[in-house]
Image (tube, rainbow, N blue to C red; front, side, top):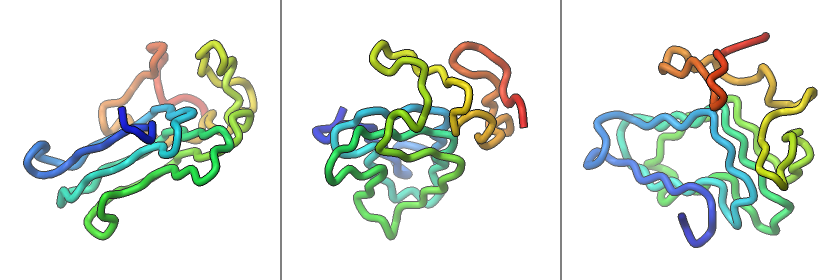
Length: 130
C-alpha cells in the first residue's frame, strides 16, 4: 500500500535475479497512481494485460517512476481509463470484476502462455477466442 494508492514495484538486482512480470491484474480506483515503479534492474519488467481504471481523479497518473531513464518497463495490451464504465465490469460496487459482453478487454490480451500463464482467476483456460 502506498500513500497515493495503487501498486508499488521495488525491483533491482539486490532483490531479483531477472526482470519482473506483472500480468492480468486490475488496478481500480487507486487514489493518485495506478503503479509506482522503483526499478533500476538491467532486465526489463513486463507489464501486460492489465487494467488501470481511475475514477475521474484530477491529476491521476497511471504509471510513475522513481527515475524513468533507468527504468525498463515493457508495456503491452493494457487498458488505461478514467471511465469505469468503459471497462464493462459486471458490478464494480460489489467487487465483481468479470467482464461483460463488449468489454474492450475481451480477447485483446497478449498470449502469456510462454510465461506459464495458462488460466485465469476462475481457473478458465487462457488464451481463448481471437
